Image (cartoon, rainbow, N blue to C red):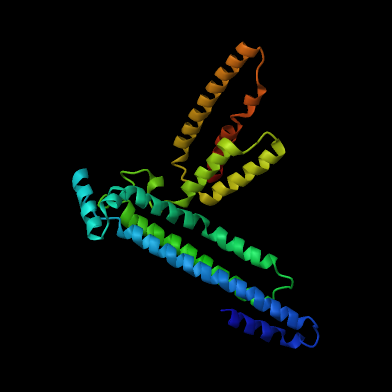
Length: 292
């Protein structure tokens, strides 16, 4: 791969050899740069191959247990299948925990692979002392986009897998009997929305209106990208309101206790619920935009 790119660099730069005294230094650096890029290329191919093997293992161990069989019969089917594949008794007893680990890594990969690629590519480009040749840059970007396209195709394939294996009561992993977050190939937007919830519940200081409004605009834009189902949001808003009511009740009681003990009210509690309040408001704005 680097040799192809280097050939393109030499061809496109040939006319400038006499005019650019730094040409050969630039050429050496471009070769150096492309060697790093080749490492990125090889690392992605290896990671994608490893992910594919993990995905295939998850499918392989999603045994057909028969939707009409009782729980004991289904469990015996799973045990017999695992024995035939050489699992020892301790691993068989830990089947669910072991497979949950596979599910978590499968999800982690899909959630983060694009970030890993772009971050590494950015690091390589940031080390550049010379402008990367325009022809080479186009080839590099084409290469990166090929990898990204592969990720998009992977996600599309996962939707097909979900329909076939994981929402079907004939198989041991299905959404009818388990919480979605504990299933393989779960929709990433569910997990991303959970991450946003945690930010608003615990991590964000939103007391400055100027900064808080900018943060809220970013959050709303992410909702518009993720497109959470309109049907799911009303019930979630009820959950958020219940959380808010509980927190207000607890904070009010805490304030009363402090007032009775110390004859003053600790104002630090006044912003405790701001994250939840703002999250509710963002979801409502999202619903209005969805109706347009």
